[in-house]
Image (tube, rainbow, N blue to C red; front, side):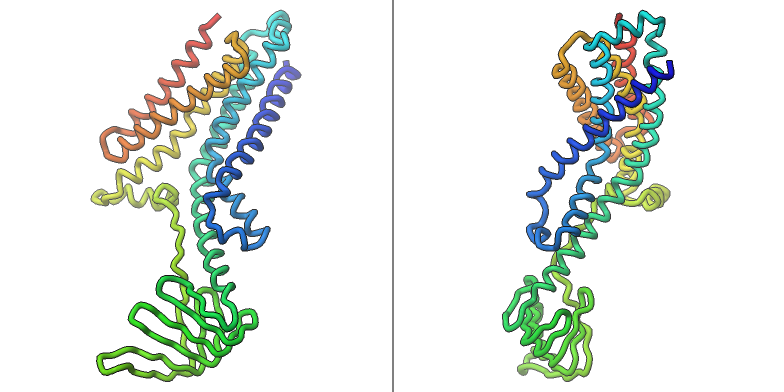
Length: 339
């Protein structure tokens, strides 16, 4: 029996990892065109970091489809290779046969909880911050000598001489108010430029005022900011919002946490459903995979719908939890009763 359990578990995990690899390639490839074009010039290592965060952002649904389809493929292989008949002939019951899949389902419930509650929101926040910092830094690094460069809609900069982060003969024009700054020397520090020995020209009704300075810290922030969504907020902040009774975002925070927590429920069912479907439904593998995809799409569709209702305060999260259990439970019950 232990050999059979190891055989089923190993094949399920192997197929799951292969599917995760395939999904990762497809998702990363599809997202390449949606990245800011300037990210293609930040260096190979940083570019790969961006792709890594992009892939993590979609990991929860990769794991969902990967576990569902992998379970199906293992069950289908047992039936297609006639191994299922030898197993039943040796006295193994259907309940015993499904046992390793049940244990793996529990493992995947825990894994799904970690991914949904922590990993994906963290990856989305880090991706937004990473892209913002590196796009801004690349724009600043691209400032060249003896060339007027428009950093944003409001800022234009001219540098007479540049050596890495050190510059000489700098001129900055701020379109907001017509402010002009000139300096003999300057140094980049992150998104700031430290100007030394220069003048600030401030327009006025009489003409302009001229201020002399020895050192001036000027914010050179580029107008690029990729913010993470409310749905990617930390769990602790969402809980704080929920505790504030009169907060206008309270229902939205409840909906986000509900979505994260209830994402684990399908994993109690989909492994067993996929496995039983593979060994009991006399269809081709492609047809069965199609059925699995349809079941998953229906779940995602009503998941989106009910999460929106929770966000509006129209339905209790506990009611939605019952609906999810009823949906997958009904499919599992039908398959288990099927002869």
